[in-house]
Length: 273
Ligand SMILES: Nc1ncnc2c1ncn2[C@@H]1O[C@H](COP(=O)(O)OP(=O)(O)O)[C@@H](O)[C@H]1O
Ligand SMILES: [Mg+2]
Image (cartoon, rainbow, N blue to C red; front, side, top):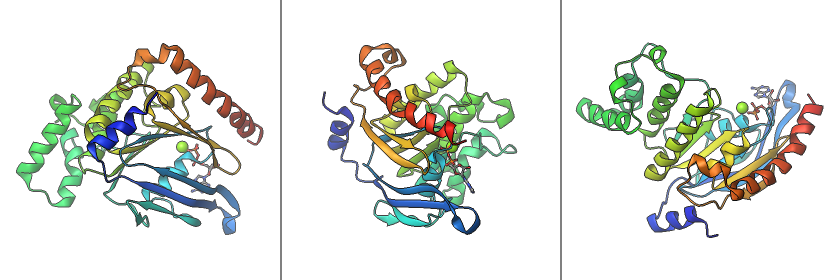
């Protein structure tokens, strides 16, 4: 089967959102004795959706945080659109597992935040925030505070808060893992639609095989001790994908293959913990 995402990409000529990770090495601890990541190398093509999958503790968040500029690598380099990453920047949007909305601001104010910092005039801000909230079905909740929103609503607000700044890359760290199964499926489908619309590169961290196969063009399976890329698997399932597709033989076949790769690593990580 042809890679649909690659075709879509070629036709729309996405030119931003190239991520290059070169020999990324991260050591923590006393005199940097503990090697967390060892010479990680991968490239994410503009506009593609890549999942970083691996057992807990293998270093997924450390990879993502390095791309975000929250962690300074001990060695190696990260380039986003050929620019070396040295600190966090507006070209990289981030959605965390924990809801990261400011509790004292309304949904509207939370989403508006980045635009205010950029100095976008009030009328334009109002228009843009309205459009984005509408897109994810939150317009009617614009004056609610985070504690008045469900988990799914909070993550929808977090996603548009990141996207409204037009990042080249959207970095997502297990954003749906705290949600119940139904809400999680709904959010996965919504994310697919949004990604298709905005054409932003997405790097999505998860430990859930089904989620990775459902969402990704590619899955980078990470191994443990120290963290490394064990396998790079292309997911050539047709798009758009719907949650029912997770029951098809093709889907199950790919999931099995990923499971076989990851099982070994999960056992290794359990043995060492
Ligand atoms: N700031 C830090 N200082 C020391 N060790 C850390 C730090 N951040 C993460 N680690 C360690 O690095 C390893 C990988 O962590 P992490 O990237 O969070 O894994 P994952 O996201 O795959 O669960 C873990 O053993 C964790 O304890
Ligand atoms: Mg993590």
